[in-house]
Image 1: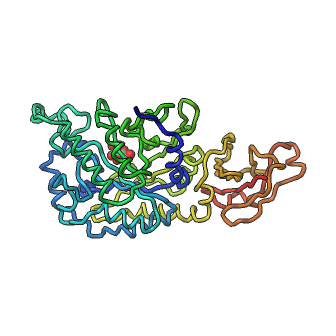
Image 2 (image 1 turned 60 degrees about the vertical axis):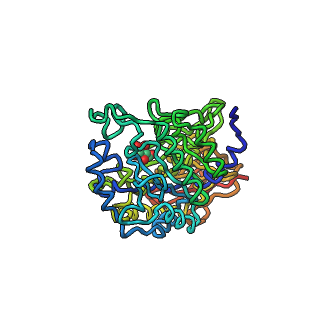
Image 3 (image 1 turned 90 degrees about the horizontal axis):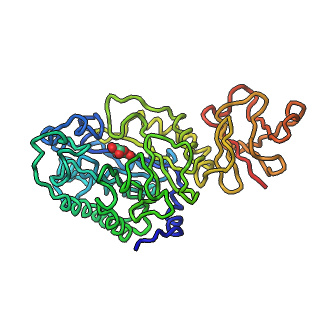
Length: 434
Ligand code: GLC
């Protein structure tokens, strides 16, 4: 009988809740149509129209070392690559299928090169693996919610052996957990309708993964989709609960606690534009400043941010994404101390920003300037050992005098002599407590 081991859980999650910021990479032959990773489903594209992209795939510019350097300089501490997405195309040299990158003109094992390059830069590494598989003949098609042939009568009476698909799926996960060295994250995606938990033979799958990769952490989508929490949010998580809640394209209003009030790990996965997979016409990129503030928001609520890039068919990360990552890196180089190893402060959210905390240091993230000095809510002057502007280490003076005497419970500080903050995106004031 499975028993959730909370102390083992907390031990394996330590690096994750320290590192806070990761890169998600959605890549595959769908980068050629360049209309997102769901193009087959959304356009009900038959395999015959999709296969030419397989026969054409040859990302001549693929440079995983450059990707890894870009992620590292952005302040990202881990990265998760799609090893197989819903289209079933494998970015690794699986012995169980011909529908794989080593059978395309490119011919190389992208998963292996990704893992080698990102480990070499000191990043933790994870693989996303889709439980769905629109290529496999035994995966449900007609009548399924998502399959490209879901309403094609020609697929109505085709016999399918779902258990044979599960053997294939488990076999591929075994390949990934056996042939590619130490993996830090296995990111399954996603459960829906009847396809959840034991329908995937979830307990057996997780047992195998944890046996082959003892310290690995898992997301919660063997149980739910991106919208659910699953049993990890209860006081008796099931064996396939996974280790963190995975809100998608949203930063939750608060962090997550289980039914006994214990905080549980979570990671918001967010696209830079509006698509996971490369979408040539989607230029709706979020500004770097917005994404910095979202990272701070996640950490202030005890969560992580997994920020996505979708490389194009030549293997290049879009220049807009690279520019955003470079700008985030600028801020992180000066202020990363307020992110790494930080979490909730247990203080009420200030009206002018957010607070992250690590031990006896509170990091006030000032997102809006004040008139009359910046209030540091929740801390008394007698508790403070020092106040510093994190970006340059300079002392920040407490404002005293008749203007502030009316508010003895609030510490007001001067971070700028002008109407503009030193960093309009987020000026971080580090308050070290006695
Ligand atoms: C959703 C999408 C999938 C994407 C995932 C990322 O599940 O279906 O395309 O990979 O979100 O979280």
